[in-house]
Length: 184
Length: 145
Image (cartoon, rainbow over all chains, first blue to last red; front, side):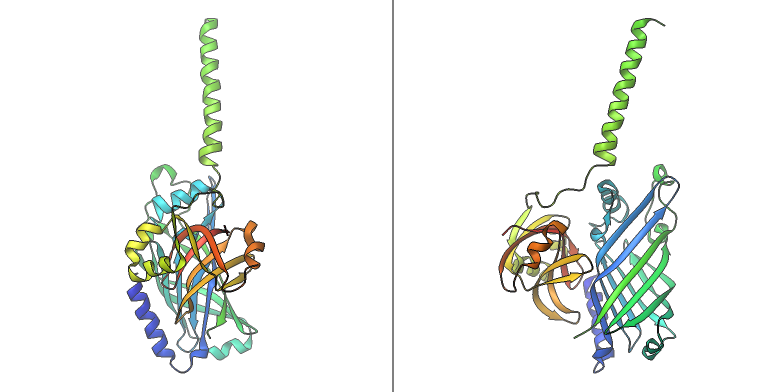
């Protein structure tokens, strides 16, 4: 998604929020980790500088992820990821634009909530609708969010060469951990 | 089998083993670059870099993404998030709060970064991973001045 679309989305978010801006929560240090497990190889990567925003008045949720910020244990894996699979030069960002379903902000007063999240996940320039479960919890001023869901590289037009097809899981476990502050 | 042939076969085997070990060490297991000691591909002011990305993201991404850049400017603040220390240049206020350049420090440079005071002139070098619509992100940063 290009930045123009992103900004129009942000504008829509802002327009929707209006005077109840206090309902918006943000972080620029969200964590996303993915894990590919096959008998041949375990591959793990983490990105600690993820932009995330939740608007509790509209239940909108937005993520912006820089592909090159994923850190791998092995430099070679990181190179292969950026050059051959994610093609990070061509598609530097991944985004998620979605909604928390059947949820009211006041539910958070009752403690940790399991929620359904649905939206568009764009990776490698290919958008796919996903639905997953996650949790939201209020801790003091902050909102803590977690979700674990699978991503299939083939859903996003990422081709895995047959030579390494045994080394990369068909479905990659993705873990999201965010700690959001109220927007000022 | 003649003695000579055995010696040749053993020699080939030895070379193959050494080659395999070298490939393992330097290709499969090659270390991450040490960004602290790398020479920057670009040296510019933090403000010029921010303007480059906000005025023409496509050109700036092609030029700077994945490169080592050294930025000079007045640091706005440092933040801590879990084990990360992030030095921030702020240039704009947007719907996501402060917008600018966020430099996450190499852990070896954390103490130095935490010692910075707002508005201090600094030179920060790091690996630029891109622009996410609000901020330009640098990783593995070090303070050269």
